[in-house]
Image (cartoon, rainbow, N blue to C red; front, side, top):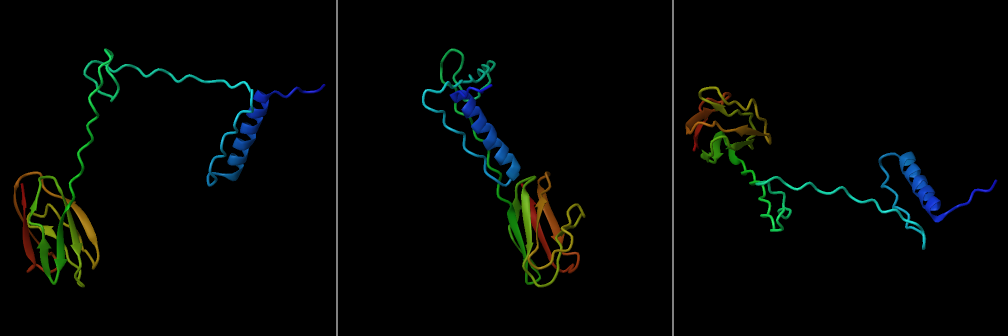
Length: 162
């Protein structure tokens, strides 16, 4: 009994073989391109599900149900860059002001290890070797916060949280 081959079966077989070859290669191979349908071949078109209409007050960047254009989507605010405090020559330098709850990047460029430790003990970087950077979160309560190096207590500084 002979099997009659139609263009649709040929396309399905080619796609199946291409998919099988991609699976045999593992995840490192790019997926094989889909075979183009032969001229005159029957091609099924699959319709996409309709997008549900947003409820009143919701904005998805699509036109409202009455046909008026939707307001453009508002991008999320960019995260603020961390303020930088640098430890060099047995001294703290850099930023002295930071937003409440903001980020503080502490970098030790000195040849000796150092810490940045708040006087009240609420923040401590631990020992930072030369080239180490640590990211801290500033307190949320406004005020002036004094700090020191736990290894070299004569090294002091302060930061204003506002």
